[in-house]
Amino acid sequence: MIRVEPPTHLRTPAQVGGEVKIDVKGEATRRSVLDALEASDPMRGTIRDHISQERRPFLCFFGCSTDLFP
Image (cartoon, rainbow, N blue to C red; front, side, top):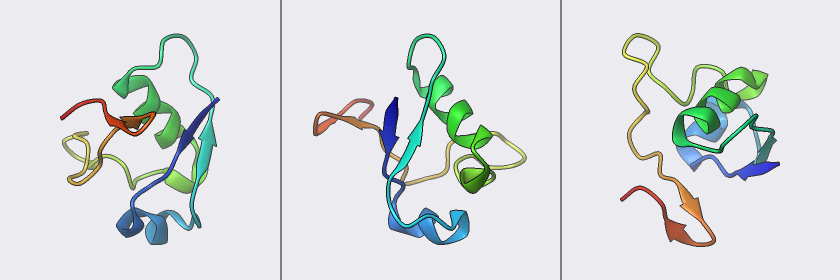
């Protein structure tokens, strides 16, 4: 179980109030976490650009208060 707290600017379009809990199959990588988020109904279309599939700006990954991918 991974807890994700979307940034404020993505909460409104995703219609979530705060934390989203997801299950990631296998190793938890950036791609697997993004895939799991995109597969969850409330977050669909808010994490990656629809055309380029690139992660949207201002989306950072933290684990135990540490920036994982600066």
